[in-house]
Image 1 (tube, rainbow, N blue to C red):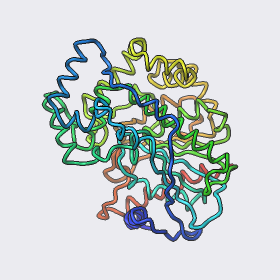
Image 2 (cartoon, rainbow, N blue to C red; image 1 turned 135 degrees about the horizontal axis):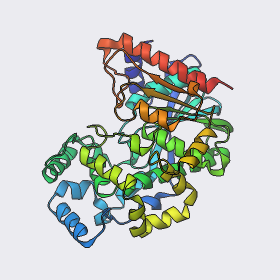
Image 3 (cartoon, rainbow, N blue to C red; image 1 turned 90 degrees about the vertical axis):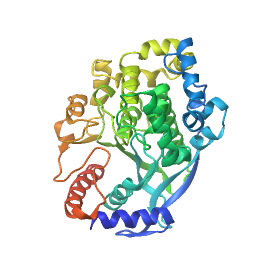
Image 4 (cartoon, helix red, strand yellow; image 1 turned 135 degrees about the vertical axis):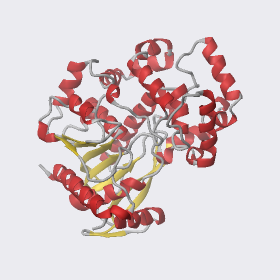
Length: 409
């Protein structure tokens, strides 16, 4: 099969809600509605990470003189409930046999940071469904995909936000309309990375609750539930498995691709992810100022106390020297149920950082691969048909390896 052909066939089926013919018969991306019970986690007043009086005044001054950033990135200042509604009431999709019986096996697909659509993941979902005969659930993380305001994907509006950031920060690099929304939010509110992650974690647990209660007609209540995490989705998957709420993941498998290392070892500067200033602030916040920030942010501090088990494990995933014994012990406990794929030329999650994270895991579960074409962290497999043969070969190799992991007993 041609990767390029599959890419556009699946994109058409996804966009138009039509079925695709597979080796197990017709399959369809079914849309389902979800209502988050933890929406209040992200619903709090904007508080810049350096919350002294002068910084607050400068922040307000900046927003007053930068209308696009004020209107489209921080509408919470105007108590715009719509800003939160889209994050808490949203659709997710399941790739499942048309009119089929409830699936006995399910794979959650968790996407990367700053994703706005599912395009590149449709071929992933299709191939895994075909190779494992499990249904694939495309789950959007908090304030991503269908959970983000539509304005954040509007190139004209976000180009203006990007310009405002460039005027504020003369040495700014990698700024673009694609990363302007997330860069601005995390620049002024780096705590949102944790808040969005913890809401996403609870949403997944809530969805599994619903499945186990027999409330999802596409998934059997006793289904084997596994995960595929890419980039930030791998980070979320690790946190989920190490916390293991309600012991839901005792027998689940987690496959991570282009992800898995601690925050210290990530370099998310990219026109598709974060600009240089946002990336710098994010790393400084979590690697240098985090404990101090917790102590002066009552809301965040109370949240950490309320969910102490999650908070402790999250802290262990920040740097190589933080809670090392706890992190290594929990990772070791996942041995044989995790598989990690890194890319030799990945500049965001380097092979070095991945190997450090999983140094206690059997080497056969850590695979670093390379391809004979110009790939990147953000776009592993190109849909351009000009070098389709090489991409198809690489895609087939990678996903055959992934399917083998899921299919092993």
